[in-house]
Amino acid sequence: MSSSDKGKRLRVAIYCRISLARYGDLVKVERQEEDCRTLCDRLGWDVIEVFVDPNRSAWLRNRKRPGWDAMLQGITGGRFDAIVVYHGDRLIRQPWDLELLLRIADEKGIRLASPTGTRNLDSADDRFILRIEAAQACRESDNTSRRAKRAAEARAATGVPRKGGKRPYGFEADLVTVREDEAAIVREMAGRILAGESTGALVRDLNARGVPNASGNPWYHEGIRKLLCGPRLAGLATFRGEITGPGQWPAILERDTWELVRRVLLGKKASFPQATNARKHLLTNIALCGSCSAPLAVRYNSRSETLLAYGCINSECDQKVHRVMEPLDEYVIGRVLRRLSDPELWERVEAVPEDNGAGAELEALEARKRQVVAEFAEDDAMDPALLRGMLRRLDERIQAARNRIASQRASHVLDGCQGMTREAWDALPLDRRRAIVRETMTVTVHRSRKGPGFDKSSVKAQAR
Image 1 (tube, rainbow, N blue to C red):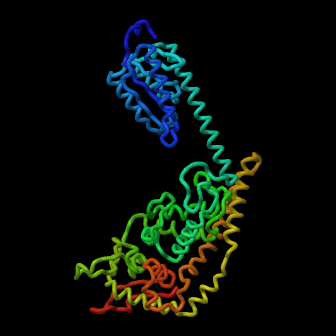
Image 2 (cartoon, rainbow, N blue to C red):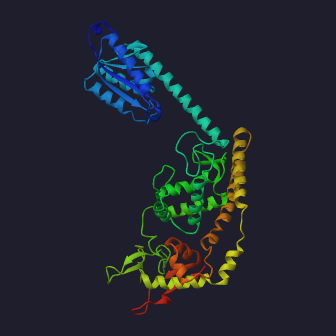
Image 3 (tube, rainbow, N blue to C red):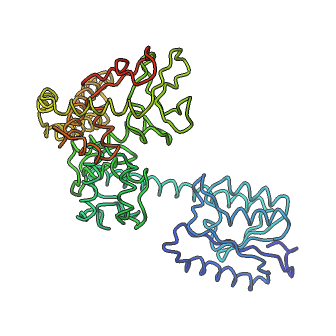
């Protein structure tokens, strides 16, 4: 402390920070404040305000520190003459923080003190020591981060569950034991998705039944999608979004089932990235315009404000079709029910063999791919072109296995539909009916050349 500060009661800002305060436990922060106040009493300085940043890391570049920012504003505004902090690494762990503080010190002439010593920010020697300490703290933080990342990668590679975080749905808090009542819900959701129902239908039904998510809250669309697309359900470990191999916990869904559910859900998200009316009516985004082949959307009939119709909304189509909804729906339903009684359809469905080995083959191919990459990383003599060729062939085989899994979709959608009656059809959820139409028919609507009334000759419902 300089001689000019002797006998002067400096106005002090105390700064306290702890990187992790579990469950709101701020005992460590309170201890920091206590030690800092003791120092201020000994120096004869007046504590004006205490700034606290619990659960805040000082070394992450993008982490906000409200207490730190508010303190700097107070210094800039001339409210404080000094900063007291428990230890230097509580205040600064990155060089840019120190340089910002030094710039303000140049303008305001502040002092920096801690129970372990006092720094004069006007002193070139003290600035030099502070810069060394900041560089050492930064290096320590980088090393800690690198070790943590390596440990997380090693755990993922061996299938060890991650530590901390929320309990995943379907598992107990140990992240390994299956919670059977929730596992049954997961399997129910997967089966309904494969049968053609939407996540919206699942949300409405589960919430109406009082079935909560893992946090005890109601379900929502994205929550169901993330759950069912998560590799954990198939017993797979991940690191940074990539599957690293089998996890050390049981699978709730078979690999084949999970792959197919994931494919269906990701396909729906790509088709409907935003909320639309596409799932509120039987043929929206299913029936096609006979002029441009674009999917039809719901339109109001030009002669009525309440009579719904299907119409082409492709701005580049110069021969747009427009058809009243109810008679077109009835016509297509009749064709679908006849198709469901057609022996040829069921011969085609039964001709697709049940392929329970595709999931196991997929896992083996993925493991081989990881092995090839690991061997290349350890062999400096391996030709990169050879590696690219091996990975390309493995990717082709992986995609072929996934296509075999996808070929099983029809059996899920059409399960229990053979010889279906109109009453049974009407009892199905709309999502399931839409899926059955997609699986059995290609519906193309052409412009009608007849007068009033439904022109079924302009509708081509071709069996698939």
